[in-house]
Length: 179
Image (cartoon, rainbow, N blue to C red; front, side):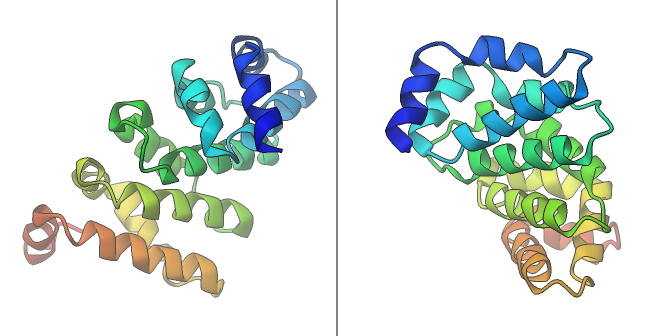
C-alpha cells in the first residue's frame, strides 16, 4: 500500500535499513534490499529515499554474491530513474551508469529487464544521455542486449539507443566509429 510505504519511510526507517546493506550477513542484505526495492514502488516514497542517498548505498554496498541482491538493487534504481520529478543530481548518473553497465548479466533475464528499463528511462533525461554515451561498456552492452531473444529486453535496448540518439554527440560518435 502506497500510504504504508510513505509512513514507513517518514517514520525514519531508511538510515537503519541502508546500514543493513553493509553488514556481513548475506540474508540480512537480501531482506534489506528487498524492502528498499518494495519501498521504491511508490513515487511518493522517492523523496524520502533520496534524502538518505539510497542510490549511493545501493551502488556502494552491493558486494554480496547473492544474485537477487543485485537484481533488487537494480530494480529500485530503475524505479528511482523512472520518476521524472526526481532531480538529476539524486540519480548520480555517472555512478549509476557505471554500476548498471558492470551489472549486466546476459544469463539473468530478470536482471537484464530491470537494468535496461532503468537505462531507457534514464536516457530520457537530457542530462544523462551524454554520460551514457561516453560509457563504452554501457554502449556495448546496449548493442549486445538488442541481440537477446527476450522481446522486452530487446525492446528496451532499442528504446535506450533511440533515446540516446537524441544526444548531439551520438551522431559524431557513430560517424567517427567510436561506438
